[in-house]
Length: 75
Image (spheres, rainbow, N blue to C red):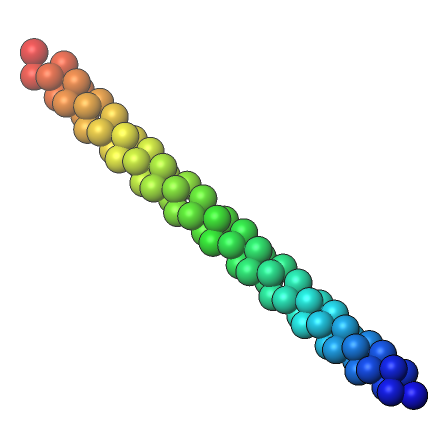
């Protein structure tokens, strides 16, 4: 009887451990998803920086074209 009681207590503790492990797994999955979101945000930021640099290049090209046109017309 006493052994059966100990076995039941052990089974209950094992069940609690399994529940905790399941919750820990869910937490880890959420953390992984958040990490993926942060990585995507970082990549988006890099894309925006590249777009800004491309815009600056286009502005420089336009200014260079305007300068060439000015020099051509002033001859």
